[in-house]
Length: 639
Image (cartoon, rainbow, N blue to C red; front, top):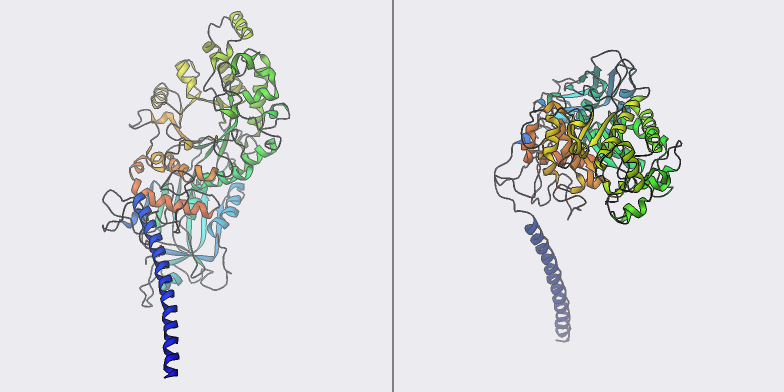
Protein backbone atom coordinates (compact mmCIF):
# COMPACT_ATOMS: atom_id res chain seq x y z
CA UNK A 1 0.00 0.00 0.00
CA UNK A 2 2.88 2.42 0.84
CA UNK A 3 4.53 1.50 -2.46
CA UNK A 4 1.27 2.21 -4.36
CA UNK A 5 0.94 5.58 -2.59
CA UNK A 6 4.48 6.56 -3.66
CA UNK A 7 3.75 5.46 -7.24
CA UNK A 8 0.57 7.59 -7.36
CA UNK A 9 2.49 10.57 -5.97
CA UNK A 10 5.10 10.10 -8.70
CA UNK A 11 2.37 9.87 -11.34
CA UNK A 12 0.86 13.15 -10.09
CA UNK A 13 4.25 14.92 -10.43
CA UNK A 14 4.72 13.42 -13.87
CA UNK A 15 1.24 14.56 -14.91
CA UNK A 16 1.98 18.06 -13.58
CA UNK A 17 5.27 18.29 -15.53
CA UNK A 18 3.60 16.98 -18.68
CA UNK A 19 0.81 19.53 -18.30
CA UNK A 20 3.29 22.37 -18.01
CA UNK A 21 5.24 21.15 -21.05
CA UNK A 22 2.01 20.76 -23.00
CA UNK A 23 0.91 24.30 -22.14
CA UNK A 24 4.27 25.67 -23.24
CA UNK A 25 4.03 23.76 -26.51
CA UNK A 26 0.55 25.14 -27.12
CA UNK A 27 1.83 28.67 -26.43
CA UNK A 28 4.80 28.27 -28.72
CA UNK A 29 2.59 26.82 -31.45
CA UNK A 30 0.20 29.69 -30.99
CA UNK A 31 3.00 32.21 -31.37
CA UNK A 32 4.31 30.37 -34.40
CA UNK A 33 0.86 30.17 -35.93
CA UNK A 34 0.28 33.83 -35.15
CA UNK A 35 3.58 34.73 -36.82
CA UNK A 36 2.78 32.58 -39.85
CA UNK A 37 -0.67 34.09 -40.01
CA UNK A 38 0.77 37.58 -39.81
CA UNK A 39 3.22 36.83 -42.60
CA UNK A 40 0.44 35.37 -44.68
CA UNK A 41 -1.66 38.48 -44.11
CA UNK A 42 1.23 40.68 -45.15
CA UNK A 43 1.78 38.60 -48.28
CA UNK A 44 -1.90 38.58 -49.15
CA UNK A 45 -2.13 42.32 -48.59
CA UNK A 46 0.74 43.13 -50.96
CA UNK A 47 0.70 40.27 -53.43
CA UNK A 48 -2.12 38.55 -55.28
CA UNK A 49 -2.86 34.92 -54.59
CA UNK A 50 -1.76 32.27 -57.02
CA UNK A 51 -4.61 31.01 -59.14
CA UNK A 52 -4.79 27.49 -60.42
CA UNK A 53 -4.33 28.44 -64.06
CA UNK A 54 -2.49 26.71 -66.83
CA UNK A 55 1.27 26.52 -67.24
CA UNK A 56 3.02 29.12 -69.35
CA UNK A 57 4.87 28.51 -72.56
CA UNK A 58 8.36 27.34 -71.61
CA UNK A 59 9.82 29.56 -74.30
CA UNK A 60 8.81 32.59 -72.27
CA UNK A 61 11.64 31.95 -69.85
CA UNK A 62 9.38 33.16 -67.06
CA UNK A 63 9.57 32.53 -63.33
CA UNK A 64 7.05 32.85 -60.56
CA UNK A 65 5.53 36.28 -60.23
CA UNK A 66 3.96 37.94 -57.19
CA UNK A 67 1.38 39.79 -59.30
CA UNK A 68 -0.80 37.55 -61.48
CA UNK A 69 -0.45 37.72 -65.21
CA UNK A 70 -3.49 38.99 -67.15
CA UNK A 71 -4.87 35.48 -67.65
CA UNK A 72 -4.39 34.64 -63.99
CA UNK A 73 -1.48 32.20 -63.98
CA UNK A 74 2.18 32.15 -63.10
CA UNK A 75 4.98 31.00 -65.39
CA UNK A 76 6.30 27.84 -63.76
CA UNK A 77 9.65 27.24 -65.50
CA UNK A 78 13.11 28.69 -64.99
CA UNK A 79 15.12 28.94 -68.19
CA UNK A 80 18.38 30.53 -69.20
CA UNK A 81 18.00 33.33 -71.72
CA UNK A 82 19.94 36.12 -73.41
CA UNK A 83 19.46 39.77 -72.49
CA UNK A 84 18.87 41.89 -74.51
CA UNK A 85 16.66 39.58 -76.56
CA UNK A 86 18.38 38.69 -79.85
CA UNK A 87 16.85 39.73 -83.14
CA UNK A 88 16.68 36.16 -84.46
CA UNK A 89 17.28 32.71 -82.98
CA UNK A 90 16.31 29.13 -83.76
CA UNK A 91 15.64 26.91 -80.76
CA UNK A 92 16.10 23.26 -79.93
CA UNK A 93 15.64 21.12 -76.83
CA UNK A 94 19.15 19.73 -77.07
CA UNK A 95 21.72 20.67 -74.53
CA UNK A 96 25.48 20.64 -74.27
CA UNK A 97 28.08 19.98 -71.65
CA UNK A 98 31.04 22.37 -71.60
CA UNK A 99 34.29 20.45 -71.32
CA UNK A 100 36.80 21.06 -68.56
CA UNK A 101 39.25 21.34 -71.45
CA UNK A 102 37.20 24.09 -73.10
CA UNK A 103 39.35 26.51 -75.10
CA UNK A 104 38.86 29.91 -76.72
CA UNK A 105 40.22 30.33 -80.24
CA UNK A 106 40.09 33.70 -81.93
CA UNK A 107 41.10 35.36 -85.18
CA UNK A 108 42.94 37.69 -85.59
CA UNK A 109 45.39 36.28 -83.06
CA UNK A 110 47.03 39.68 -82.48
CA UNK A 111 43.79 41.30 -81.34
CA UNK A 112 44.31 43.18 -78.09
CA UNK A 113 40.54 43.40 -77.55
CA UNK A 114 39.90 39.66 -77.99
CA UNK A 115 42.91 38.67 -75.90
CA UNK A 116 41.57 40.75 -73.01
CA UNK A 117 38.06 39.36 -73.57
CA UNK A 118 39.26 35.76 -73.33
CA UNK A 119 40.98 36.49 -70.04
CA UNK A 120 37.86 38.23 -68.72
CA UNK A 121 35.33 35.63 -69.85
CA UNK A 122 37.31 32.74 -68.42
CA UNK A 123 36.01 33.77 -65.00
CA UNK A 124 32.57 34.87 -66.27
CA UNK A 125 31.95 31.55 -68.03
CA UNK A 126 33.38 29.49 -65.16
CA UNK A 127 32.66 31.43 -61.94
CA UNK A 128 33.17 28.27 -59.82
CA UNK A 129 36.45 27.39 -61.50
CA UNK A 130 37.07 24.30 -63.62
CA UNK A 131 38.00 20.77 -62.77
CA UNK A 132 41.14 19.16 -64.21
CA UNK A 133 41.30 18.42 -67.92
CA UNK A 134 42.03 14.70 -67.66
CA UNK A 135 40.03 11.99 -69.43
CA UNK A 136 39.49 11.29 -73.11
CA UNK A 137 35.92 12.53 -73.07
CA UNK A 138 36.97 15.94 -71.77
CA UNK A 139 39.63 16.19 -74.44
CA UNK A 140 36.91 15.83 -77.03
CA UNK A 141 38.39 12.76 -78.69
CA UNK A 142 35.18 10.79 -78.12
CA UNK A 143 32.71 13.60 -77.47
CA UNK A 144 30.35 14.41 -80.31
CA UNK A 145 26.82 15.53 -80.94
CA UNK A 146 25.77 11.87 -81.20
CA UNK A 147 27.24 10.68 -77.90
CA UNK A 148 24.99 10.93 -74.83
CA UNK A 149 27.74 12.27 -72.57
CA UNK A 150 27.47 12.62 -68.82
CA UNK A 151 24.52 15.02 -68.97
CA UNK A 152 22.49 12.57 -71.02
CA UNK A 153 22.81 10.11 -68.13
CA UNK A 154 22.20 12.76 -65.45
CA UNK A 155 19.12 14.29 -67.02
CA UNK A 156 17.65 11.25 -68.78
CA UNK A 157 14.40 9.50 -68.00
CA UNK A 158 15.63 8.24 -64.66
CA UNK A 159 15.71 4.65 -65.95
CA UNK A 160 19.39 4.72 -66.79
CA UNK A 161 18.80 5.27 -70.51
CA UNK A 162 21.25 7.29 -72.57
CA UNK A 163 19.95 9.88 -75.01
CA UNK A 164 21.39 11.13 -78.25
CA UNK A 165 21.74 14.83 -78.90
CA UNK A 166 23.83 15.78 -75.87
CA UNK A 167 27.34 16.75 -76.92
CA UNK A 168 30.39 18.23 -75.26
CA UNK A 169 31.70 21.59 -76.40
CA UNK A 170 35.47 21.70 -76.22
CA UNK A 171 36.16 24.86 -78.22
CA UNK A 172 34.64 28.23 -79.04
CA UNK A 173 35.94 29.56 -82.34
CA UNK A 174 35.63 33.37 -82.59
CA UNK A 175 36.36 34.93 -85.95
CA UNK A 176 36.34 38.46 -87.37
CA UNK A 177 35.46 38.13 -91.05
CA UNK A 178 36.92 41.47 -92.17
CA UNK A 179 40.66 41.96 -92.36
CA UNK A 180 43.03 44.90 -91.91
CA UNK A 181 42.67 48.14 -90.02
CA UNK A 182 42.98 49.00 -86.36
CA UNK A 183 40.41 48.11 -83.74
CA UNK A 184 38.74 51.48 -83.94
CA UNK A 185 35.87 52.07 -81.54
CA UNK A 186 33.51 54.55 -83.14
CA UNK A 187 29.83 55.40 -83.39
CA UNK A 188 29.51 53.46 -86.65
CA UNK A 189 31.03 50.12 -85.68
CA UNK A 190 29.27 46.94 -86.79
CA UNK A 191 28.20 45.04 -83.66
CA UNK A 192 26.26 42.27 -85.40
CA UNK A 193 27.23 38.66 -84.71
CA UNK A 194 26.19 35.07 -85.40
CA UNK A 195 26.50 32.15 -82.97
CA UNK A 196 26.34 28.48 -83.96
CA UNK A 197 26.01 26.03 -81.07
CA UNK A 198 27.55 22.65 -81.92
CA UNK A 199 29.77 19.97 -80.45
CA UNK A 200 32.69 19.74 -80.22
CA UNK A 201 33.18 23.27 -81.68
CA UNK A 202 30.79 26.20 -81.39
CA UNK A 203 31.46 29.43 -83.24
CA UNK A 204 30.97 33.19 -83.14
CA UNK A 205 31.46 35.14 -86.36
CA UNK A 206 31.26 38.92 -86.72
CA UNK A 207 32.48 41.72 -88.96
CA UNK A 208 34.36 43.42 -86.11
CA UNK A 209 35.94 42.56 -82.78
CA UNK A 210 33.07 44.48 -81.17
CA UNK A 211 30.54 42.10 -82.69
CA UNK A 212 32.55 39.19 -81.31
CA UNK A 213 32.39 40.80 -77.85
CA UNK A 214 28.60 41.03 -78.05
CA UNK A 215 28.38 37.42 -79.18
CA UNK A 216 30.70 36.24 -76.43
CA UNK A 217 28.46 37.91 -73.86
CA UNK A 218 25.39 36.16 -75.29
CA UNK A 219 27.23 32.82 -75.25
CA UNK A 220 28.22 33.34 -71.61
CA UNK A 221 24.60 33.96 -70.60
CA UNK A 222 23.62 30.48 -71.81
CA UNK A 223 26.15 28.65 -69.61
CA UNK A 224 25.13 27.38 -66.15
CA UNK A 225 27.03 25.62 -63.38
CA UNK A 226 25.86 22.16 -62.31
CA UNK A 227 27.12 21.69 -58.74
CA UNK A 228 25.95 18.07 -58.46
CA UNK A 229 28.37 17.13 -61.22
CA UNK A 230 30.84 20.03 -60.86
CA UNK A 231 30.34 20.76 -64.53
CA UNK A 232 29.06 23.50 -66.82
CA UNK A 233 26.10 23.02 -69.10
CA UNK A 234 24.18 24.84 -71.81
CA UNK A 235 20.62 23.62 -71.25
CA UNK A 236 17.89 23.83 -73.90
CA UNK A 237 20.18 25.79 -76.15
CA UNK A 238 19.28 27.65 -79.32
CA UNK A 239 20.90 26.19 -82.41
CA UNK A 240 21.72 29.60 -83.85
CA UNK A 241 21.59 33.27 -82.84
CA UNK A 242 21.72 36.03 -85.45
CA UNK A 243 21.79 39.37 -83.74
CA UNK A 244 22.42 43.07 -84.28
CA UNK A 245 21.52 46.28 -82.42
CA UNK A 246 18.55 48.43 -83.36
CA UNK A 247 20.30 51.70 -82.41
CA UNK A 248 23.99 52.50 -82.59
CA UNK A 249 24.06 54.81 -79.51
CA UNK A 250 23.11 52.88 -76.37
CA UNK A 251 24.29 54.67 -73.28
CA UNK A 252 24.24 55.32 -69.57
CA UNK A 253 24.69 58.86 -68.22
CA UNK A 254 26.70 58.83 -64.96
CA UNK A 255 26.80 61.94 -62.79
CA UNK A 256 29.86 62.09 -60.50
CA UNK A 257 29.39 65.69 -59.31
CA UNK A 258 26.54 65.51 -56.82
CA UNK A 259 28.24 62.58 -55.15
CA UNK A 260 31.76 61.48 -55.99
CA UNK A 261 31.88 57.91 -57.32
CA UNK A 262 35.06 55.91 -56.82
CA UNK A 263 36.84 54.17 -59.68
CA UNK A 264 35.71 50.77 -58.45
CA UNK A 265 32.07 51.81 -58.84
CA UNK A 266 32.69 53.15 -62.33
CA UNK A 267 34.47 49.95 -63.39
CA UNK A 268 31.74 47.76 -61.96
CA UNK A 269 29.22 49.87 -63.86
CA UNK A 270 31.12 49.40 -67.11
CA UNK A 271 31.17 45.63 -66.54
CA UNK A 272 27.41 45.64 -66.04
CA UNK A 273 26.96 47.82 -69.14
CA UNK A 274 28.89 45.27 -71.19
CA UNK A 275 26.61 42.55 -69.83
CA UNK A 276 23.57 44.26 -71.38
CA UNK A 277 25.44 45.42 -74.52
CA UNK A 278 25.43 49.15 -73.82
CA UNK A 279 28.21 50.88 -75.74
CA UNK A 280 28.41 54.49 -74.46
CA UNK A 281 29.14 55.99 -71.05
CA UNK A 282 28.19 59.67 -70.82
CA UNK A 283 30.46 60.88 -68.03
CA UNK A 284 29.00 64.00 -66.41
CA UNK A 285 32.14 65.42 -64.79
CA UNK A 286 31.30 69.04 -63.91
CA UNK A 287 28.23 70.72 -62.42
CA UNK A 288 27.16 73.27 -59.82
CA UNK A 289 27.93 70.95 -56.94
CA UNK A 290 31.54 70.00 -57.67
CA UNK A 291 34.42 70.05 -60.14
CA UNK A 292 36.09 66.72 -59.32
CA UNK A 293 38.72 66.43 -62.10
CA UNK A 294 42.21 67.84 -61.57
CA UNK A 295 43.67 69.46 -64.71
CA UNK A 296 47.37 70.39 -64.34
CA UNK A 297 46.84 73.12 -66.95
CA UNK A 298 44.20 74.72 -64.68
CA UNK A 299 45.12 73.43 -61.21
CA UNK A 300 42.79 75.71 -59.26
CA UNK A 301 39.60 74.40 -60.88
CA UNK A 302 39.65 71.19 -58.84
CA UNK A 303 39.33 73.32 -55.69
CA UNK A 304 35.67 73.03 -56.63
CA UNK A 305 35.72 69.32 -55.68
CA UNK A 306 33.89 68.36 -52.49
CA UNK A 307 37.23 67.62 -50.81
CA UNK A 308 40.82 67.08 -51.89
CA UNK A 309 40.21 63.34 -51.38
CA UNK A 310 37.41 63.28 -53.96
CA UNK A 311 39.20 64.17 -57.16
CA UNK A 312 40.05 62.27 -60.33
CA UNK A 313 43.51 62.65 -61.81
CA UNK A 314 43.86 62.59 -65.59
CA UNK A 315 45.46 59.18 -65.12
CA UNK A 316 42.27 58.02 -63.40
CA UNK A 317 40.19 59.31 -66.29
CA UNK A 318 42.46 57.57 -68.81
CA UNK A 319 42.19 54.34 -66.83
CA UNK A 320 38.38 54.42 -67.04
CA UNK A 321 38.45 55.23 -70.77
CA UNK A 322 40.81 52.33 -71.48
CA UNK A 323 38.81 49.97 -69.25
CA UNK A 324 35.67 50.90 -71.18
CA UNK A 325 37.40 50.53 -74.56
CA UNK A 326 38.25 46.88 -73.94
CA UNK A 327 34.54 46.26 -73.30
CA UNK A 328 33.44 48.00 -76.48
CA UNK A 329 32.20 51.09 -74.63
CA UNK A 330 32.96 54.64 -75.74
CA UNK A 331 33.27 57.34 -73.08
CA UNK A 332 32.34 60.90 -73.81
CA UNK A 333 32.49 63.77 -71.37
CA UNK A 334 30.13 66.51 -70.33
CA UNK A 335 31.51 69.77 -68.98
CA UNK A 336 28.19 71.49 -68.37
CA UNK A 337 28.24 75.13 -69.48
CA UNK A 338 27.43 77.94 -69.39
CA UNK A 339 25.04 77.19 -66.54
CA UNK A 340 25.70 74.89 -63.54
CA UNK A 341 29.13 76.49 -63.07
CA UNK A 342 29.08 77.47 -59.40
CA UNK A 343 31.86 74.99 -58.53
CA UNK A 344 34.08 76.41 -61.31
CA UNK A 345 34.07 79.74 -59.47
CA UNK A 346 35.40 78.18 -56.25
CA UNK A 347 38.74 77.63 -57.94
CA UNK A 348 38.70 80.46 -60.46
CA UNK A 349 36.32 83.30 -59.53
CA UNK A 350 37.34 85.23 -62.65
CA UNK A 351 35.24 82.83 -64.73
CA UNK A 352 32.07 84.05 -63.07
CA UNK A 353 29.99 87.19 -63.74
CA UNK A 354 31.20 90.14 -61.67
CA UNK A 355 29.32 90.62 -58.41
CA UNK A 356 27.51 87.32 -59.10
CA UNK A 357 27.24 86.51 -55.41
CA UNK A 358 25.24 89.68 -54.72
CA UNK A 359 23.33 89.96 -57.98
CA UNK A 360 22.65 86.32 -58.74
CA UNK A 361 23.02 83.95 -55.80
CA UNK A 362 21.25 85.93 -53.12
CA UNK A 363 18.48 87.37 -55.26
CA UNK A 364 17.53 84.60 -57.69
CA UNK A 365 19.09 81.27 -56.75
CA UNK A 366 19.46 79.07 -53.71
CA UNK A 367 23.16 78.58 -53.17
CA UNK A 368 25.42 76.88 -52.27
CA UNK A 369 24.21 73.94 -54.35
CA UNK A 370 24.43 71.37 -51.55
CA UNK A 371 21.32 73.03 -50.08
CA UNK A 372 19.29 72.57 -53.29
CA UNK A 373 19.62 71.53 -56.89
CA UNK A 374 18.98 74.87 -58.60
CA UNK A 375 22.16 76.89 -58.00
CA UNK A 376 22.60 77.34 -61.75
CA UNK A 377 25.13 80.18 -61.73
CA UNK A 378 26.50 80.53 -65.31
CA UNK A 379 29.95 81.38 -66.58
CA UNK A 380 30.67 84.89 -67.77
CA UNK A 381 30.34 84.73 -71.59
CA UNK A 382 31.94 88.16 -72.13
CA UNK A 383 35.50 87.24 -71.03
CA UNK A 384 38.16 85.77 -73.30
CA UNK A 385 39.52 83.86 -70.30
CA UNK A 386 36.30 81.82 -70.18
CA UNK A 387 36.87 80.48 -73.68
CA UNK A 388 40.59 79.91 -73.12
CA UNK A 389 39.75 77.62 -70.20
CA UNK A 390 36.98 75.84 -72.11
CA UNK A 391 39.26 75.19 -75.10
CA UNK A 392 41.96 73.82 -72.81
CA UNK A 393 39.49 71.46 -71.14
CA UNK A 394 38.08 70.32 -74.47
CA UNK A 395 41.55 69.64 -75.87
CA UNK A 396 42.57 67.64 -72.80
CA UNK A 397 39.48 65.44 -72.88
CA UNK A 398 39.84 64.87 -76.59
CA UNK A 399 43.45 63.75 -76.16
CA UNK A 400 42.67 61.51 -73.23
CA UNK A 401 39.76 59.79 -74.92
CA UNK A 402 40.72 56.24 -75.84
CA UNK A 403 39.16 56.60 -79.27
CA UNK A 404 41.61 59.39 -80.08
CA UNK A 405 44.81 57.62 -79.03
CA UNK A 406 46.49 54.53 -80.45
CA UNK A 407 43.08 52.97 -81.19
CA UNK A 408 42.28 55.61 -83.80
CA UNK A 409 42.57 54.63 -87.47
CA UNK A 410 44.02 57.62 -89.35
CA UNK A 411 42.37 56.49 -92.59
CA UNK A 412 38.95 56.31 -90.95
CA UNK A 413 38.89 58.79 -88.06
CA UNK A 414 36.45 57.96 -85.31
CA UNK A 415 33.86 60.54 -84.39
CA UNK A 416 34.34 61.77 -80.83
CA UNK A 417 31.37 63.24 -79.00
CA UNK A 418 31.54 66.09 -76.50
CA UNK A 419 28.53 67.08 -74.40
CA UNK A 420 28.55 70.85 -74.00
CA UNK A 421 25.58 71.09 -71.59
CA UNK A 422 23.43 74.10 -72.43
CA UNK A 423 20.46 73.49 -70.13
CA UNK A 424 18.67 75.46 -67.40
CA UNK A 425 20.26 78.86 -67.99
CA UNK A 426 19.77 81.43 -65.21
CA UNK A 427 19.58 84.42 -67.55
CA UNK A 428 19.06 86.83 -64.64
CA UNK A 429 22.68 86.26 -63.63
CA UNK A 430 23.75 88.05 -66.82
CA UNK A 431 22.03 91.31 -65.85
CA UNK A 432 25.13 92.63 -64.07
CA UNK A 433 26.14 96.09 -65.28
CA UNK A 434 29.49 94.93 -66.70
CA UNK A 435 27.81 92.28 -68.85
CA UNK A 436 25.07 94.68 -69.99
CA UNK A 437 27.67 97.26 -71.00
CA UNK A 438 29.60 94.67 -73.02
CA UNK A 439 26.39 93.54 -74.74
CA UNK A 440 25.63 97.09 -75.87
CA UNK A 441 29.12 97.45 -77.33
CA UNK A 442 28.65 94.21 -79.30
CA UNK A 443 25.10 94.99 -80.41
CA UNK A 444 23.62 92.03 -78.48
CA UNK A 445 20.08 92.96 -77.52
CA UNK A 446 19.08 90.23 -75.03
CA UNK A 447 20.53 87.64 -72.71
CA UNK A 448 19.05 84.94 -74.94
CA UNK A 449 21.08 86.29 -77.85
CA UNK A 450 24.09 86.26 -75.53
CA UNK A 451 23.40 82.58 -74.88
CA UNK A 452 23.35 81.87 -78.63
CA UNK A 453 26.70 83.65 -78.98
CA UNK A 454 28.14 81.47 -76.20
CA UNK A 455 26.80 78.29 -77.84
CA UNK A 456 28.28 79.26 -81.19
CA UNK A 457 31.71 79.72 -79.61
CA UNK A 458 31.32 76.41 -77.74
CA UNK A 459 30.50 74.56 -80.93
CA UNK A 460 33.40 76.20 -82.76
CA UNK A 461 35.80 75.14 -79.98
CA UNK A 462 34.44 71.60 -80.16
CA UNK A 463 35.11 71.58 -83.91
CA UNK A 464 38.61 73.00 -83.44
CA UNK A 465 39.42 70.18 -81.01
CA UNK A 466 38.02 67.49 -83.32
CA UNK A 467 34.79 66.70 -81.48
CA UNK A 468 31.10 66.72 -82.35
CA UNK A 469 28.92 68.71 -79.92
CA UNK A 470 25.91 67.34 -78.05
CA UNK A 471 23.56 69.77 -76.27
CA UNK A 472 20.59 69.31 -73.98
CA UNK A 473 17.27 70.08 -75.65
CA UNK A 474 17.04 73.65 -74.23
CA UNK A 475 19.52 74.86 -76.84
CA UNK A 476 17.25 73.61 -79.61
CA UNK A 477 14.13 74.83 -77.80
CA UNK A 478 15.53 78.40 -77.67
CA UNK A 479 17.05 78.60 -81.14
CA UNK A 480 15.52 75.88 -83.32
CA UNK A 481 17.15 75.72 -86.76
CA UNK A 482 19.65 78.47 -85.88
CA UNK A 483 21.80 75.73 -84.32
CA UNK A 484 24.42 74.16 -86.61
CA UNK A 485 23.18 70.92 -88.18
CA UNK A 486 26.07 68.91 -86.77
CA UNK A 487 24.82 69.50 -83.20
CA UNK A 488 23.19 66.44 -81.62
CA UNK A 489 20.07 67.30 -79.62
CA UNK A 490 19.80 65.41 -76.31
CA UNK A 491 16.06 65.14 -75.63
CA UNK A 492 15.27 64.62 -71.97
CA UNK A 493 12.07 66.38 -70.94
CA UNK A 494 9.71 67.26 -73.81
CA UNK A 495 8.84 64.36 -76.08
CA UNK A 496 7.49 66.59 -78.84
CA UNK A 497 10.65 68.72 -78.87
CA UNK A 498 12.84 65.71 -79.64
CA UNK A 499 10.43 64.67 -82.40
CA UNK A 500 10.55 68.18 -83.87
CA UNK A 501 14.36 68.22 -83.83
CA UNK A 502 14.46 64.91 -85.71
CA UNK A 503 11.91 66.17 -88.23
CA UNK A 504 14.08 69.27 -88.81
CA UNK A 505 17.13 67.18 -89.65
CA UNK A 506 18.98 67.06 -86.33
CA UNK A 507 20.39 63.85 -84.90
CA UNK A 508 18.77 63.04 -81.55
CA UNK A 509 19.82 61.11 -78.44
CA UNK A 510 16.72 60.11 -76.46
CA UNK A 511 16.50 60.15 -72.65
CA UNK A 512 12.89 61.24 -72.17
CA UNK A 513 11.33 58.63 -69.88
CA UNK A 514 14.72 57.02 -69.12
CA UNK A 515 15.60 58.94 -65.93
CA UNK A 516 16.60 56.32 -63.37
CA UNK A 517 16.46 58.69 -60.39
CA UNK A 518 12.71 59.03 -61.05
CA UNK A 519 12.40 55.38 -59.96
CA UNK A 520 9.57 54.59 -62.35
CA UNK A 521 9.93 50.81 -62.21
CA UNK A 522 11.45 48.57 -64.84
CA UNK A 523 8.19 48.11 -66.77
CA UNK A 524 8.01 51.85 -67.52
CA UNK A 525 11.54 51.90 -68.88
CA UNK A 526 10.99 48.68 -70.80
CA UNK A 527 7.88 49.90 -72.60
CA UNK A 528 9.13 53.42 -73.33
CA UNK A 529 9.97 53.78 -77.02
CA UNK A 530 12.67 56.02 -78.42
CA UNK A 531 10.88 58.90 -80.12
CA UNK A 532 7.60 58.43 -78.28
CA UNK A 533 4.50 56.27 -78.68
CA UNK A 534 4.10 56.45 -82.42
CA UNK A 535 6.17 55.01 -85.29
CA UNK A 536 9.20 57.13 -86.05
CA UNK A 537 8.86 58.95 -89.37
CA UNK A 538 12.50 60.07 -89.07
CA UNK A 539 13.96 57.03 -87.33
CA UNK A 540 17.32 57.44 -89.07
CA UNK A 541 17.74 60.68 -87.07
CA UNK A 542 17.48 58.91 -83.72
CA UNK A 543 21.00 57.77 -82.90
CA UNK A 544 19.66 55.91 -79.87
CA UNK A 545 19.23 56.77 -76.23
CA UNK A 546 20.68 56.94 -72.74
CA UNK A 547 19.45 55.99 -69.31
CA UNK A 548 20.33 58.89 -66.98
CA UNK A 549 21.51 58.56 -63.39
CA UNK A 550 21.64 61.81 -61.42
CA UNK A 551 23.21 61.35 -58.02
CA UNK A 552 21.52 63.83 -55.65
CA UNK A 553 20.56 60.87 -53.43
CA UNK A 554 22.97 58.24 -54.70
CA UNK A 555 26.58 57.46 -53.86
CA UNK A 556 28.82 54.38 -53.93
CA UNK A 557 26.70 52.67 -51.28
CA UNK A 558 23.46 52.49 -53.26
CA UNK A 559 24.46 53.25 -56.86
CA UNK A 560 24.10 49.65 -58.06
CA UNK A 561 20.67 49.20 -56.50
CA UNK A 562 19.23 52.31 -58.15
CA UNK A 563 20.80 51.72 -61.57
CA UNK A 564 20.40 47.93 -61.91
CA UNK A 565 18.55 46.03 -63.24
CA UNK A 566 16.48 49.02 -64.43
CA UNK A 567 19.10 50.16 -66.94
CA UNK A 568 18.88 46.69 -68.49
CA UNK A 569 15.26 47.45 -69.44
CA UNK A 570 16.46 50.54 -71.33
CA UNK A 571 19.28 48.48 -72.88
CA UNK A 572 16.81 46.04 -74.42
CA UNK A 573 14.73 48.90 -75.72
CA UNK A 574 17.82 50.21 -77.53
CA UNK A 575 19.12 46.86 -78.80
CA UNK A 576 16.16 44.62 -79.57
CA UNK A 577 13.27 44.85 -81.96
CA UNK A 578 10.79 47.50 -80.80
CA UNK A 579 8.01 44.91 -80.66
CA UNK A 580 9.53 43.31 -77.56
CA UNK A 581 8.25 46.33 -75.59
CA UNK A 582 4.83 44.64 -75.70
CA UNK A 583 6.16 41.45 -74.09
CA UNK A 584 6.35 42.62 -70.48
CA UNK A 585 5.16 39.32 -69.02
CA UNK A 586 7.76 37.19 -70.78
CA UNK A 587 10.46 39.82 -70.22
CA UNK A 588 9.93 39.67 -66.45
CA UNK A 589 11.38 36.18 -66.14
CA UNK A 590 14.29 36.97 -68.43
CA UNK A 591 15.08 40.14 -66.47
CA UNK A 592 14.96 38.24 -63.20
CA UNK A 593 17.46 35.76 -64.63
CA UNK A 594 19.67 38.68 -65.66
CA UNK A 595 19.40 40.24 -62.21
CA UNK A 596 20.68 37.03 -60.62
CA UNK A 597 23.51 36.96 -63.12
CA UNK A 598 24.45 40.54 -62.21
CA UNK A 599 24.50 39.55 -58.53
CA UNK A 600 26.81 36.67 -59.37
CA UNK A 601 29.09 39.12 -61.16
CA UNK A 602 29.29 41.44 -58.18
CA UNK A 603 26.64 44.03 -59.08
CA UNK A 604 24.15 44.66 -56.23
CA UNK A 605 21.03 44.83 -58.43
CA UNK A 606 17.66 45.44 -56.73
CA UNK A 607 14.65 43.13 -56.72
CA UNK A 608 12.11 43.81 -59.47
CA UNK A 609 8.81 44.04 -57.60
CA UNK A 610 9.26 47.45 -56.02
CA UNK A 611 11.19 50.66 -56.46
CA UNK A 612 15.00 50.59 -56.19
CA UNK A 613 16.57 49.73 -52.84
CA UNK A 614 13.58 47.63 -51.76
CA UNK A 615 14.92 44.75 -49.69
CA UNK A 616 13.76 41.11 -49.99
CA UNK A 617 10.99 40.66 -47.39
CA UNK A 618 11.67 37.03 -46.48
CA UNK A 619 13.81 34.01 -47.41
CA UNK A 620 13.54 33.00 -51.07
CA UNK A 621 15.55 32.32 -54.18
CA UNK A 622 16.95 35.13 -56.29
CA UNK A 623 15.17 33.48 -59.21
CA UNK A 624 11.70 33.51 -57.65
CA UNK A 625 9.13 36.26 -57.67
CA UNK A 626 8.26 37.85 -54.35
CA UNK A 627 4.88 36.43 -53.39
CA UNK A 628 5.51 33.01 -54.92
CA UNK A 629 3.56 30.28 -53.13
CA UNK A 630 5.39 27.33 -54.61
CA UNK A 631 8.79 26.57 -56.04
CA UNK A 632 9.20 26.84 -59.81
CA UNK A 633 10.44 23.97 -61.90
CA UNK A 634 14.20 24.16 -61.84
CA UNK A 635 16.53 24.59 -64.80
CA UNK A 636 17.06 21.20 -66.42
CA UNK A 637 18.59 19.80 -69.58
CA UNK A 638 15.94 18.41 -71.93
CA UNK A 639 17.16 15.58 -74.15
